[in-house]
Length: 526
Ligand code: GLN
Image (cartoon, rainbow, N blue to C red):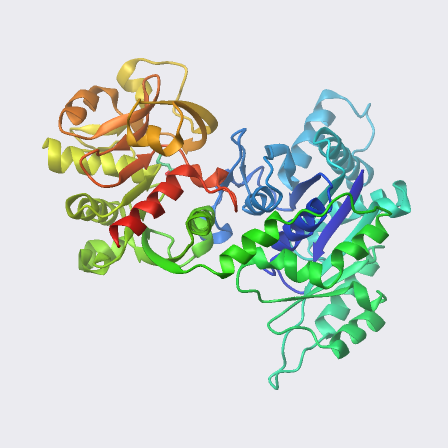
């Protein structure tokens, strides 16, 4: 197994995840199987409880793991499906070591960071890498070198470097090259961060410099000299037009070739699908506009996978997507004027009451004006509420998650039906849905059985289904008593899912409902 360790210096938020994913993409093009592990040195066990304001979207994997959004980059760039084991956190590692200690596994010894914590980390990395049957395993260590929390992880990879063959572990350090007030590229922060790296007994093989402008030859030479890496191993990662351009940008500078040499590998192939996809992306002829009505709209990372899935749909259909972010609460205060003229309306997932009435206004607007509408998870629940209130006439219909209501059309099912196996916990990961023959859902997927990823606790209340369907909203996707898809056949495109199709959308293979949504916008704006 070959390991490529990606660390960061100077500051976080440099796009280490995208760099790591791009490195993987390059190696994949050379015919190798690549997997990835993301290490988040925080104490949380997983990202499930984390606020999107702080960390961006919580990404959901097929096994239901709630993980860091970088795993989404890996899945999209490597076109793979990962599991929760691929996201390591301090919380997970310490929990298992403490459990082992309580069981007496350490035979009364003193349990310490070195070797017990570091051994646990190494074991996990090797186990996951082997289990994935890949040739190369990327290991991205979150945070920056020098953070207290990342120390045990850096120590573990340092040990691995000694234990594995020389050509099996490569270190890539991603740093920031800031511009001075005069616009000069400054290398000092990079020098300091490499120094901190060396103090831990590690040395970078490759330095990726993130900079607003392409690195000059002089900057590269300086970094090479002070940080002791060959000049061809100083790679320029200036701001790209789109993250999908990054693999090409790195590859043009010979990163792939350098890695092959370092890892003692020879290219097994030369896949060009990614390049073709990027070329297609650069020549999109039309534009469509989509309103995303949410509550984290000033932090676009909170809806990252949705943005990506819309982009994939656009690439497949030959159009660029202009997203207008609409803060749901503003809609409540100012009305729906801001939606006028926009091609389609998307209401994403969410939790809690803030902004819900604004989202409901947007849904009503889409339904009444026959604007293509796409609801995801909470977006579907609110579409059902809007329909129940304004078409079925169930006054004050709502979700028991939000407010007390006479008509809980969205509810925790167990209380309602005496179904006991569900509890009040989150329904996470892959579940099947059966689609109704001849429905929009059936046409979109071209199948009657599908599997998609979920993350919800509440559902459509079965008690109201007949009443709602009698008025023209149908539940065309179901998993037994659970409603998975709602659609209004009399509208041009009104489609909402309890699941999250955005997580399985890929560049070059857009998620079917995203593609259908964008196609509907294209057709209605003709
Ligand atoms: N809050 C809703 C629920 O728990 C929807 C969740 C979501 O949109 N991911 O069911």
